[in-house]
Image (cartoon, rainbow, N blue to C red; front, side, top):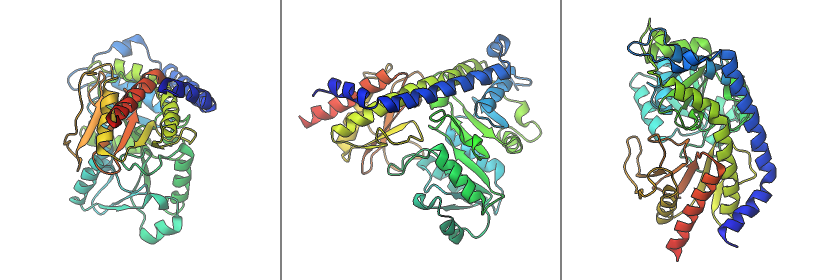
Length: 404
């Protein structure tokens, strides 16, 4: 059986799972559309170009309304000046934590770039502790390790670069927050929501999280946002974060959107559709990759907590070839040949495959991997399931070429 036939078989086998994804996509599309209608978005807001200090910036105000409504949160900050998800998390931590406070990650080690942020908190006398992922809901274990209520509890929804851990579903996050809040009532729950937006029909702010963050050039920007990130949650906390991001006394009353809000608004409107398309493609690809003998996480019929497909290749050369195959199927830079490189914040070389219209966008079809065992490819994004499937076929063929 050739690859094309195998993918057709996969579409039949995975049909029930595909229908689940399509149902979630429909619900999220309607939810975001409702947010636009409730926020009263009009063409003046869409075309407004704020400059300078950004006083009374209608674009910024519109973004905050639409995102807070889409995530069922009390308030939100959405700014092109926040560069990434890590920047957003860093802003929350420095805004809400004070010397002698404690932050606890209950989902194990944080990813490489966030580790640098955590290390810098130590200079302020802020303690940091990790609960191993497998003990995230073991209340007796957590109580035995954490004697005093931490100021902030961090939950990472996606697997990050910890390839072996599962990404968390909304029901799992809800259970964790409910259980842990029973012993640490005053703690702030911060969820890194990157890659998790619109994967299910609820967001962490709807099931107990106090603050969530995410990057606009991941899925939630709908492949149109040129930069930026969001922070959503309880109003009191969002106000404190706003004062840190700009300046106390000015806070969320300044910051120009420079007309970028048009692309961001279009992006979140389209995001549920693009994310659904990507999930369909990744589900079908997961079935095919496993049939070909590759180890995959998650398997095609397992619940998904994020929009990332992991392929464990166990060989450096295979990882490089696979990502080069994916690169060749991108709409931009298809003739480029990615090679491993050193990147700020990472302890090992990283190879990145992705050719889209925004630098570093993982909402557009892309894949990456760290050059350390077991050499895992992390695949995410895509405009359509056809693009995802075709790109992964290209990656598989590159590996088979190497074998021959």
